[in-house]
Length: 153
Image (cartoon, rainbow, N blue to C red):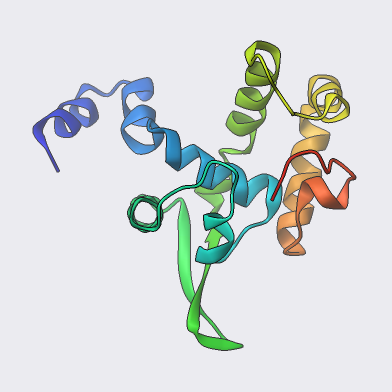
């Protein structure tokens, strides 16, 4: 760990710590894909519209695992694959992702975030969080299970 990261963690500032853990573009995109799209396999993340490079994806998954935000386990049905899943600590990021989604949909010039989803989040954030947790339990895509198909897998 570099000195800059060490200093952020030493400061005790929650914002500095959060940015240290997930303050780059790719980490929250990976978490978004897990939370909203139910992605669990390495190759599933590679087909996101942002086109993350495989080496960067491997690094971000490792960082998230090191921070206990996700777990990595062998797929019992295919020993050559790994399953990535959110831990309870990772699931605590659901409100963060929802807030970024609302903020981004308001300010992004070409937002493709479904207006119905944004309205639901603004009206009942806790209800949306519960629905996402239920989708995660079922290993399904939240946006597809609830008809918000404009967010591409």
